[in-house]
Image 1 (tube, helix red, strand yellow):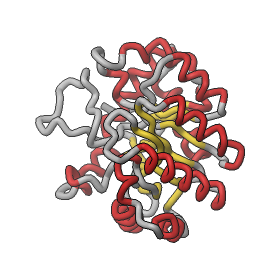
Image 2: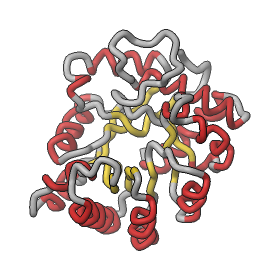
Image 3: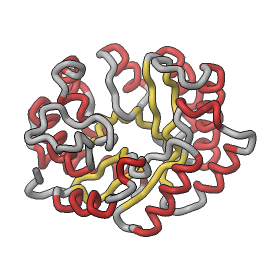
Image 4: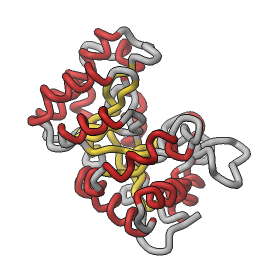
Length: 266
């Protein structure tokens, strides 16, 4: 599925994931064929953040990245971890700190470690003047409190893969956050509550993402045999979101990409 005019920017792709190790070049080709011309590779660990930089250096006009430690891996952040992230951020392809935040749903890392790593990465973003790509699951109140403390020091911040409710959305918008929308909205079992909220997100704050290889749109026909999500399916997500906002997919693609370009300073 492709769009007739504007190109798309996928703001969160886990391209260093093992699901892409054997064919990431073909994945990039399919993305471009579908009108997804630029990708932000998500850094979830120090190792993956460094690998993302290497991929960006091989595809300098198509790929950019973040550098960060996901809350799942906060317990693995070494004492010099922030210094390592700082060094990675000196590469011109690194456009944001992240993916950082809080995940109290699975608690793969103890909550105090998650909070400490989150605060450290927000402080680094403030020091470097970089935007932040953030994750939150079942931790809204603590997440909100921490972000509110740092928000004025950070140029931009986005909660990627937003899945919350109306009240949470408006609290995030009050913090002048951007909102990332994924194929979660294409899942009638889990994402139906999001559809009426899409109109409430100002277009200049809305960005689109796949979070590939995760969150394959449930309503995609035909589905890939691998059941793996790819950036090429961002056009489908764009069409679904645009339909529920009440604008054309081309208009949404243009708006989302312009917003992403400004947010990440592409």
